[in-house]
Image (cartoon, rainbow, N blue to C red):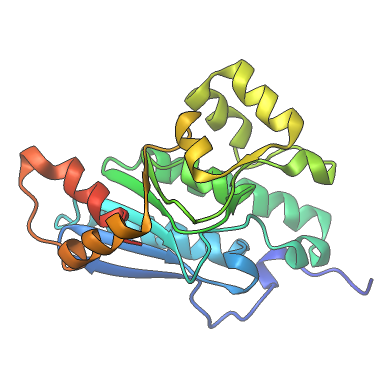
Length: 228
């Protein structure tokens, strides 16, 4: 392999890897990059900025995070990890964890709209959200890093344990286990699974987000997230 580069120098510096759209009271954040939306430092830099934009916008009541195309996020970009030097790789991991902590602590409802594979660090992004909605035929969810000889990073071990309990989380991570959406629902990893017919019905009603009544706030945000 040739000379290593800094993790923050990987990829096109002009490309936005997280798009931000405000749709009524919802800030829609879309992860978008090559390699199944695998994340890099630049993606997390953009995600961090979008989280702050949504936090400070008084018109935003909720944040929905989804992936571009047919995938949510397949974890860290392997090409970047192979190319980056050890020191900047450490800083990249530190910044990723700081960004997810900011997301987790944002005082607005955050929903992951899981529209495809959501594994490794991609699943950790979803774990940092308050609620998770998944498309039934979307793909696999979990932390399979042990199959690559490494441990889950960016707080994945702690977040999964908080969600399903220490013993279950340990079992899943040691086995490198991934689950389809129905199994993930049964295991308590996600809050809702949406089938194709239901999703078509929801899309017709909620792509244009209405002003949300306080008593129906969570249900309407969940319906909106289910449309992806």
